[in-house]
Length: 315
Ligand SMILES: [Zn+2]
Image 1: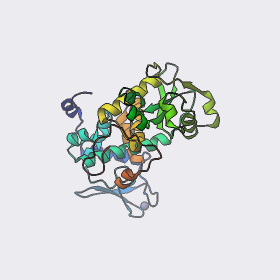
Image 2: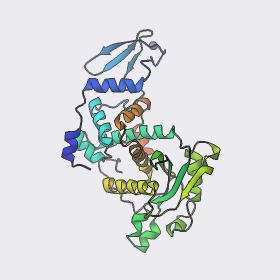
Image 3: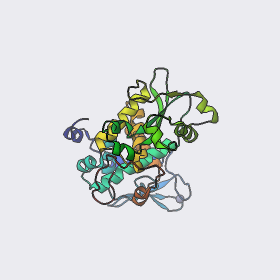
Image 4: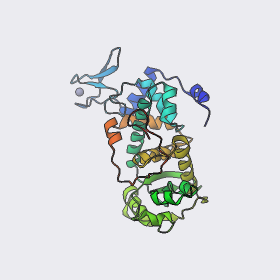
């Protein structure tokens, strides 16, 4: 990753008008539609604070951010767009808060709202075609080197299934990494015994289109020397989670995995446009819901979780 100074230089100078146009196109890809009556024509009503779109038929005033991930945010549009731009680099909330000059909590919330939009997009697109599947454990590889018996007993690695559709050249057509509830008895998994059959079955059930799709899936062997595209992508994901964030606890692990897959799939394409499109099409999520997310996932007590700072938004 480039140093923070070059990141700052590389950030485009978004104007409010540019952002409004881009968000308008993302929210109404087929042109304006009144949210109340569906009428396609509007008057633009600009005030100092924001632009509203008044329906010519029923006079309903629609704001640009209503019904999008940006709804209710007091952060200027231009900062949101800078945050979207920076998500292409996979940066932490701490660095984001420095770069776009908002508080840590605001940066954390923006990043998580963007991840929420990515997650919604991901749910709408199940895997299909000829698949490869790999069951892994987040935390497992790293833990082995600590070698402490005590810690090994406390270890609750998080089962993750990596699934992908690849083209003839071996490039990803689609990629998902899902933290799924693992098989009973993580001890067996810790010893490298029982594979994640149950995790893989759950993954196929939830994230693969079509009943017979699982039949066409090739199951890859777990191993940190693995040379397949899936093994490599998983190692990249773990490295990113641990180096950039100091590791991620179970509550938000899925959101980060979704972000990683989004970036990995859209590399060399217009990722920013895609992110703006999903933000415009996704209803927002509140801070309360984000921090209150319950997880059926077992905790990882040894995790590289950062000490809590600035309220309850530590990750
Ligand atoms: Zn109307």
